[in-house]
Length: 468
Length: 65
Image 1 (cartoon, rainbow over the protein chains, first blue to last red):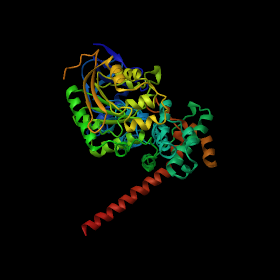
Image 2 (image 1 turned 90 degrees about the vertical axis):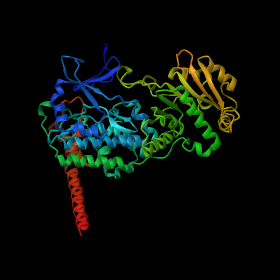
Image 3 (image 1 turned 60 degrees about the vertical axis):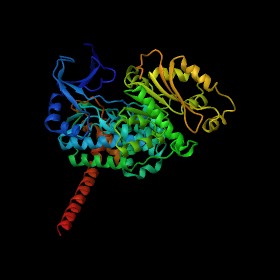
Image 4 (image 1 turned 135 degrees about the horizontal axis):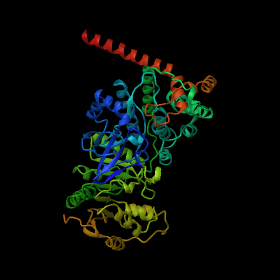
């Protein structure tokens, strides 16, 4: 068996680390963490969090694996379908992740434990809801000790949420360059002055930033360090205050105008229904285990895949679309759909230590089938990509493809072309087919009723796809 | 505000920032803030708990009637 320690993604916490063996993911619990892990299990916190789907489940594995010098236990965690990062979440996804962290901290305190980190990267979306994935995030609570993860919680959750809500929703992208969350002094500077009138933001962001600056100027002497106590009630009050501050923030409107696309365009209900039935037919033929829907808008067609039990990631560039998609996912209780923000012209890059700490979007779990419905004309006309580049994108992602061709005389294409004065790369159906046929086999092509659009099912030529 | 600045310049040495498995820098300013404002948080929590206690007591009394 090949054991591969995931040292670039799991190196900070001395309590344990992740490793892969034979393609399976494991978590080693180190001996140094033994008393905390025992308390975590014996206090009932572990069971409670897993039973309430707040923490990812795991099984304890007996086989000798991991590092024998430091091993206490080996856990085999449940696999999360798709790892996403905070800069790919819509406002409500981010807010739900923050509230989950606070809820877990409150439950931990009730069982004599506390969260020792408050990282947004420890939260993932599984079965349509946020869940904590770091089983080793807890330590025994020492009566009187302040919350060590308070700074991280404010940087990872409260600051980005406040900026998205009160300054500009695009500021969530600050998390992409600041992997340990938005620095509080930066957040305080970017927030409107009026936010000082909100008690929660005044304390947790503005005063917090001020004290951080002040404390960093003062040289600390470890020998003089003594413990200053903060009561459990004060800690619970702090959590209440953070929760109120997070809940009071609301989504700032300001998307790119695509969220009402299907209400305001020329699609007839006949065309929409026909397109949905074609997508269902093509999915039936390809039978993919995972689907990505690129340019998914509010996820109408992603739901065709998700409803068939296929784990589907529903990407869109417009945060308003992703927000609407997530709220609908929550409302319906959909387990197989994950809406995320993605700009295909500048996709989430690899970042962090060795450029491996956070994987690029294409280095995570890739799908068996990609859907690109009413997307390619945007990439060519607005994104200035030649069709060859567009084909290369899809060739890299998945062996199967459901893709829609929108002709130049389609009303939506005309709207895009009006702004370009004819300056764009070549684009017509014959070129579209010839470019794709270099790498894909066109298995099905059907004109969508009530339009001149064509929906294709393709499979990559270099893959041994099942004949369907 | 000036009170906080004064206290912030005198207190950081007294606050333990060390977590048991302390790999995370809790930030001296962040620990200090929690201590400084602990009284306020504690009072708010007490007020909220009392409010819910009284409200629940009254509601259960009404239900019994």
